[in-house]
Amino acid sequence: MIEIKDCVMDYGDKIAVDHVSLTIPEGCSYGLLGSNAAGKSTLLKLMNGIYRPTEGSILIDGKNVYNEPSVKERLFFADDETVQYSDMTLRDMKHYFGRFYPKFDGAMFDKLVKTVGLPEGKKTHTFSKGMKRQAVVICGAACKADYLFIDEAFDGLDQTMRTIIKNILIDEMLDNRLTVVFSSHNLTEIDEFCDRVGLLHAGKVLFDRELDSIKSDLVKVRAAFDREITADDLPELEVLHIGRQGSLTEIIARGGAEKARAAAEKLAPKICDLMKLSLKEIFVYEMEGVGYDGSKLDEE
Image (cartoon, rainbow, N blue to C red; front, side, top):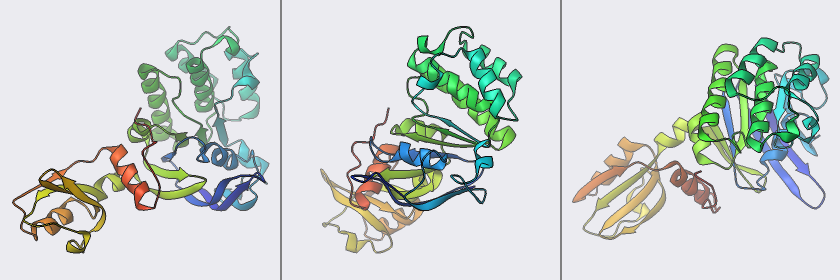
């Protein structure tokens, strides 16, 4: 389990992480969602003990990740910068990571390299961005770390390779209770892979919830009423938005589908339909609910 306790990262002229507190359960896939410069990469580096927080602490299974070197052999960080491996071949990387990770699985490494079709004898500076990402994620899986952190997890991969890498990670989660934490600004990636998501903006966590809970709790109602409806007419719901769409009133509210329908039907609508929200709509309204613009989040 990862426990982030009131964490601050202050660069002097900029606060990159601003009093963040999160708990990430063991064995889950956790997505850090946010636009560029939201603080995602800095938070991942803090979780890996690369940076020391200005304030607060980060514990992994009860041990301080920055102060306890023994914790680091249980972590693997695949960031977007691979220059440190540029003069290595995949064979070199296999040897390199095998020295530092006691549970490194060489047979698994070989199998995964063959699966994705990477050239073992070429230096990684000759690889495309997507090939470099594949190589580092394969190393992370083969290291048999308990916690795998990936910055912009599927950036540079085509859809086929995204599916292969996701399946590799899912297998490790199921077989070895691997915990995966990855950053993304891509809602599709979050939707396809995550159990839980934290939304970051300007270094702050706006919310942290299970994805299924978010989807089931927030609903859209479209109905036709004889009069104008306001949020005061729906005290049973937490209304995030209410407005007109032609002759229909559109209501976005928390409370779940059954509760939303019952609340609307008490007002005797001529018609009443529940609509499914897209994931982008959900996050836009969640961000607007706490006073931020969510329109910059990407669906693809």
